[in-house]
Length: 197
Image (cartoon, rainbow, N blue to C red; front, side):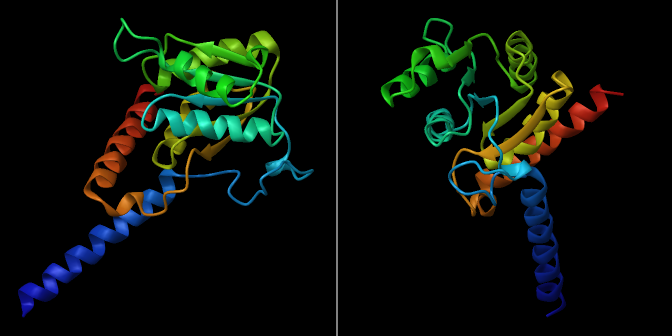
């Protein structure tokens, strides 16, 4: 009996930690906004939408397209290198998705060299500076929003970044793969803070 009580207590603590981490890792700044921008600060139009590859890259590209088509910004930046150097970059693939969906090619910028979130942030920061864009919507997946926001804000401190998730997946943190993502992201955040000291 004591063992069962002990086991239940451990499970309750584990899932409380997992749930708390899921909330911490996924700050979606557009979650309370309607599908189109409004006059409210957190729901106002931006200068550009940035989508970085990784995870479900196609969903991230499609979310950027949806935001563009709903009037959130007049420009999109896709960032991400190819996993295989002999293949087209992830950014180029995302660009294809957007063009097929009707986004004009001249509204899209790409960074094809970034291999991780840190490089995404640094390379996109250069594009933002060249265009004098200071208000940006950053698209990733829920588990990656906190860390990507931190990286981008450090790379471009004069830019206002709002993060939003590529897809609605409220139960992502309930699976073993979700737990791995959580602790991987937490490790990345710790590395971010330690590296900044």
